Length: 355
Image 1 (cartoon, rainbow, N blue to C red):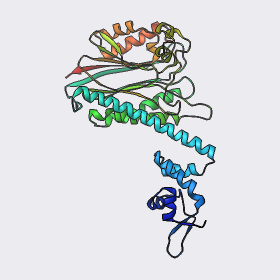
Image 2: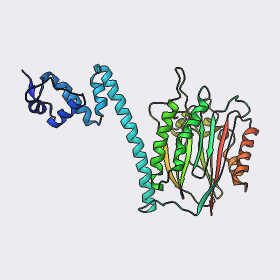
Image 3: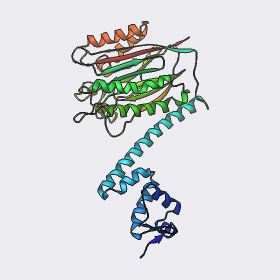
Image 4: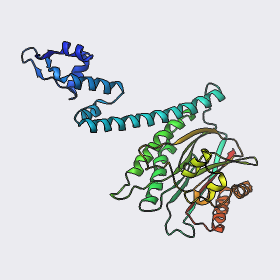
């Protein structure tokens, strides 16, 4: 069989001539020949399998630049590339689904609009971070401002301190963004992706640092929470202290599956083993939530250097005291020291006040 015109080839490949012209322009599927007088594109029937592959890859949403690369691979390598691409798409879709669910829940509970900036609320805050009594270096980081509260715990080893600092620094530009409350979760989702990329960029030939991250971003009375790892966020409202995050650890997964109880998890030798962290795995998975702050609320963000050695009852007592955030942070650090402080300790205390 001789060469086919673009129309005949398009019909055989179940494509359109317009698509074939585009694929030629970007180098994905050039014609076998071009008529020197008419300029018509001519295709070899042996190009049909490639044309059909390109069409199928486009149907799953693969960009043309990536299709060009995939089409140049051996079949086994192409299969691996397609698998990796679809895993990325699935992870991105899951992240968007979680964000959509949170927004729908919030809007359903609060009417048709999300509250905009409430000028009658302010935040009083303090942050503290110490090495502890056992470690010889500090991989934790804590940050607090009027709009952003954050704690990160870098993995002990080369790059741990840089990883925790990079994670928080990736969020800090959000302090300058004058965005409505409804956009907070979208902003945080993008920033945590940037944080993950920043941490991955610290890799060396023999070491990839990782870090946890827990942060709150405020717009008026709305607080957007992002969480990855085993750093924690607590809320003291009235006399009740609530844990707002769930640890992304192996032992917590065992508790969730009923294989360990909480007492066993608390003393398990693998209790610090993370299943999610920035810089770890193929794709960052962050928990996102939107909360409404009330005057009198007190928030605590901390690394496991505090939560693993000071029980919740003692935390509640310390947070319930009338002391300001600076003195409360000092009290919490002292409690960790009294328990031996075997790990770095980082914490942020923030009070929501009416002004």
